[in-house]
Image (cartoon, rainbow, N blue to C red; front, side, top):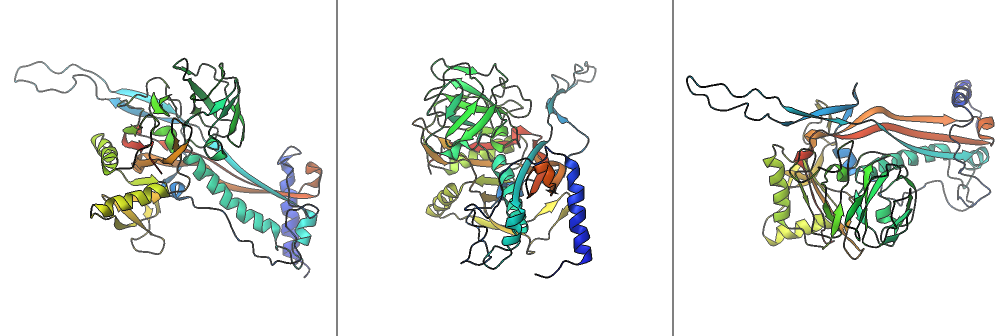
Length: 446
């Protein structure tokens, strides 16, 4: 192996020096690539190329516009024109009564999403020998970048409410696998609906998720023994607020019983259909599966347009995408195609350039199938098909407080081990400035 040049040596030395200032408690996660365990970092048979066997697509995250956070901790929404402030006036008649708009405030603070990796100095050396994977730090850095964006995409598409198949005072079980339970993250504040008492349980603000393992979510004391048929729903997210949190209403019929998910600081009681802080349309079927229909889709689009919005994108799972295609083909109607321009702010690609995406459309609205789209649960605790979201992205944005940062630490004394550690973190939050022009269709068959 060739000796490093002077500039390379100085660069490596400075990187270790500057990274040391983070202190002994920084990046203490003790899981690394090593040679002495079965991590496969060094193998005497196979070559260096590492292929992905994971779905790294992040279509929903890519479709939501990005913006700079700005000097704000929230925003205000005008929800009422004022009563009687506008009316016809006769020639000598009195003027309308003076009234003011109703202004509601929504608070929002940035969330931090982080991804870590590490490798022992021995694995860094041996991975570059014959049969190794090459530069293990560069390999894991690249993989961590994919995982980091994937995590934000999954948080953006996290389901907000699910019926339980069982539980206790401090645990909730959703179905029999980890698919639905994974929509809740450590640090999320959750509440419950007690089906036996027909009442929401959301008085204890300390009911916070402490771990998620398989189908089981461990959290603070619920105040009641949770059982099959009860519902868990998100009040506040530790990570990025999801689209499902935003496109929600109080008393939604999740699995046949009620759920009242929240978002930001919105009052849980009061997000009923037609209110300013509820979706244009949240279509459920009381936990009974039904096939996607053009009527359901058209109603969602109609509700958004009635409320003054214009749908910009339809997000659904691959199952609903193929159902919609067969549905349109059987009626001798076909999905359209149009150029989708990528842009940030006022800067956009030209239609037809290689960076544009050609998408299927319905009524001129681009359709994005995303594998992370959440599914509904029926009243028998079985997963149904994926949901469909009809969104006006003019009022949605991912506000970035700090762009993705990469930190590398080579302070062996701080780690008390001969390891190199890396961290990627992003500080951002998904904002919705108008809930009234977003829609959702749930309880669909797969």
